[in-house]
Amino acid sequence: MEAPQRRHDTKPTRARHRNEYQRHAQKRYRKVRSGERQQLRQLVVELEAAKATAVAAASGRKNRPPWSTGMLSWADIALALQDAAQVSRSDAWELQVQVVNQARLGRAMWTYATNLLAARHVSLPRSPPARREGLDWITTQLYHNADAVVAGLGFPATGELFFDIQVAEERDGGHTVTIRHQREVDESWGSVTARYHSFFIASNGFGYDAVETLHDDNDDENDSSVVRSDKVYYFLNLDYCVEWTCV
Image (cartoon, rainbow, N blue to C red; front, side, top):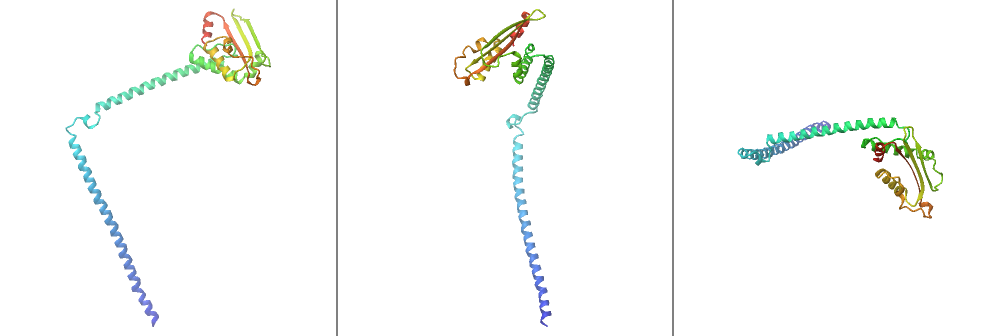
């Protein structure tokens, strides 16, 4: 008799717990909804205040000139756009000029390089940009082929003093003068090359004065450098000589 009584008592308990859970859930839901409504009311107040401020500012600007509000007129905007368009057209024209110049330089260097038989027996192109590129090209070739070039020029294997001048007559009546000079100087390699480059390229001298301030009487062989120069000058006519002097 007691067992059926216990089963009968559990049913009201479960119903009571379920009802309490539903009441707590509804209470939490109402609390969340109340907070959302409060946030919306506050947002409405802020938007109304912003609207009133904007309306007041707009009504105050109606009778003011455009420049008093810090805004540009349509005429000023059009002028600014016109200036930007002119700058763009000017930049485009300059770029087109650069493209044409680079194409012309490329054709000149292609012709120069394809017709170049030996770096010692040619002159540089007439155009200044092509002359710079040609000089750089010859210098690069000599740098990467230094051993073969020095061997072909017949310099002594040691660092002994060596000086030689050769004059050869060309078929067209001109003469080719080849000067070879080798000596040891008490200067670093960078200093020597800088002086020779300045003397030959900038002033087109024969190079004798380039190392006049460098001394040969240093006993420390580890600090000495071997300076080798081989410059070919063409004297065919006055114009050709002047052209070569401009190198």
